[in-house]
Image (cartoon, rainbow, N blue to C red; front, side, top):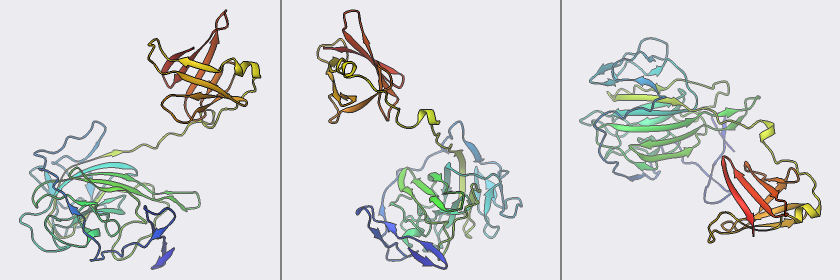
Amino acid sequence: MAALGGLAFAAADDPGVPGVTAPRWKQHDIHRPRPQVVDPGPAPAAPIAPPGDAVILFDGKSLDAWETPDGKPAGWKVSDGAMEIVPGTGAIRTRASFGDVQLHVEWASPSPARGVGQDRGNSGIFLMGQFEVQVIDSYKADTYADGMAGAIYGQYSPLANATRPPGEWQVYDIAFRRPRFDASGKLVRPAGLTVFLNGVLVQNNEEPWGPTSWLEPSPNDPTLKKGPIELQDHSHPVRYRNIWIREIPERSSPPPARAGIPVAVGLSDRVLDGYVGAYSTGSNPGELAWKISRDGDHLLLKLPFKPVPLQLIPVSESVFVLPHTDAELTFRKDDQGRVTGLFRVGDGERPLTRQ
């Protein structure tokens, strides 16, 4: 754990050595390796159509969904289906706030290109107004790696430089997960970002160690669960078009009755032994057999394509379930004592006949 400007942050894990941490690159270290250049192919001839549940943030006609950070009308200009930064008018942000989202943005840096380093078609996209995905002309241009197009600004350099020439439309598809905190305000899960630039993966579920900022990390605000999408005015006439967003729902959790391992009932040796044997799974002679054996007070199901048998938990004299799957095996006996079974997984069923 290290400290900078009163802010504590841990060294990033080295994915190649479990349990070993590695130091982070200093922000904007000019010696940080540049990513490989990848040709992303031609730019889309027309804006990419949004999915049916998307919220349209910019349709090429109106800035009604946008305002300045102090609530005034957005001062950027709109023409030919795009909005363009008017240098000096300041950033704009959405009137609505968002948390977990899928965000689509198309942008183009000025052509002909002017300037070098960070003074070359610079802007930025901020998730929740805090986490910046860099917008900059990186086509045959050099700057520090964590400030290139596709970077999580100041933290993670892109995995590839997949930019097109200035003036051509670049496409960002971003999946963002907001940070989570417990009731005391302690961070329990950091923010997450996956970014595709022109169809090329440039950020693979990276976890910012705090909101992006210039020169030093910023602290997380545990009270903030949603925030606007903000576009930066960095004094360059960058253009944007076809901006849409999808809010990502929380994953559901099962109720207590559907979670956990079922409680087993006790069965006699006679009952358990009566189910042991090899079973066919269909009418074709060549179909592989399933084998059921006994292990103490429960049964094991050996499938031909799995090396380790699966434990079957008895919940009644004739019904056995798997501990971690919505699956059950129901045994039946006919008048002659012949055993058959019905194996259900989800909404599919497979009959079993003992050999």
